[in-house]
Length: 373
Image 1 (cartoon, rainbow, N blue to C red):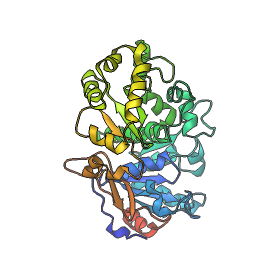
Image 2 (cartoon, rainbow, N blue to C red; image 1 turned 60 degrees about the vertical axis):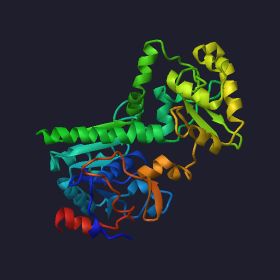
Image 3 (cartoon, one colour; image 1 turned 120 degrees about the vertical axis):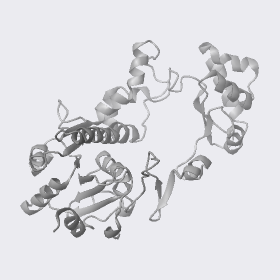
């Protein structure tokens, strides 16, 4: 349990009030990101408790938030939620299209109560279109954008990039971007509006660079056949003598020169960089060199140069990496190691606030703070 009276957010969004309708995945991540940046985020939980598969203290997407438990199907609970809407700057929901409306918390009802409200909606397919009301997950949405087809080796099937690319990259972060853009317009004298963030839209948008390369003839629709998808031997991952891996990204000639020298490639092997027909030979030479030493040995060899080579670390190892450790990229908060807020600000630094709350933990405090009840 936590002491909500000590909740004093820092960061550039301090003073912003966000009401989140509890859900799973990208919508909670969006609200967490706003909380990391200083917003006062109140999560409306179901009275029956959490819907996540871990204990609440490990549900890090709920860090920095306070929780109020409301039965939105009960008229009294709905009215309380609408009163909170009146005091909110932002609402975040991740229901299927039409669910919030059926609960009485759709955009029309909420904007009637608070005309300056930014109403953020997070879905996979978007609020309209032939699939809008159908179920899906990160992988489903990636599949239809063209992005999933491009990820993987030339001789294998498309590979699954966790759920980071769709749910959180193309989804949650685009919702945050839309919310902040709409807030800017409100601050300039505009009215509130709905932000419709769809994972398919955001993921497609992330691939804008590739769209341009394809249009210009510099990208082929063949997995593992391009500069940035393992097609080039100097942009790939190689096994070391101890079963570890090193990531090589020596794209530019000056960086490749450092890489080749430290790896021990001879002049003829290094010259193969400039002839794609010779890339299989170059790849074999690189793989053979990396197999001679351990990951730790190669990490030391490449640590202080511009070879654009790094060891592939596990989740457990990453916090101890010298660069990440120096910047406190990972921190321990309430006994749980987790990523620190990002990005960083010179004058209004973001900081971790409350640990993840038990559902309904701050009901009385939220009612007092937001409504004066």
